[in-house]
Amino acid sequence: MEIDEISGIVVDECIAIHRELGPGLFENVYEAVLAGRLEKRGLSVARQMPVPVEFDGQLFDPAFRVDILVEDRLILEIKAVERLTQTHIRQLLTYLRLLKQPVGLLLNFSHATMKDGIRRVANGYNSH
Image 1 (cartoon, rainbow, N blue to C red):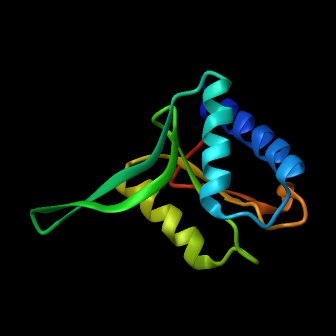
Image 2 (cartoon, rainbow, N blue to C red):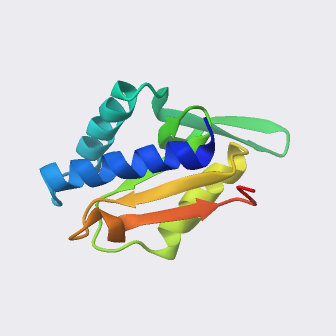
């Protein structure tokens, strides 16, 4: 399955979840519900996946945790904040770089509509 197809499924599920639950819940609730919906669609999902950092010959494990990794290639960072900031984007870019993944989705469930809360972040990715 292509990464764009996986992204499409994720976006569809996020919109459906947001329509049903609305904004205002904690991030871990959206994470759990989204993971369950993606698994129901037949996708492999890893929640709170540890991200090691190697620096100066030492391995620091886990330095971070990715909210959701779909099909071992699409990183999802779940937020429930007033607005996304550059810090959130840098956080996802760091995860992409450390895990050597091409693309991730920053998903903010606090917007009035989910469409406004989706940000695709690429790490040198080209879908063509």
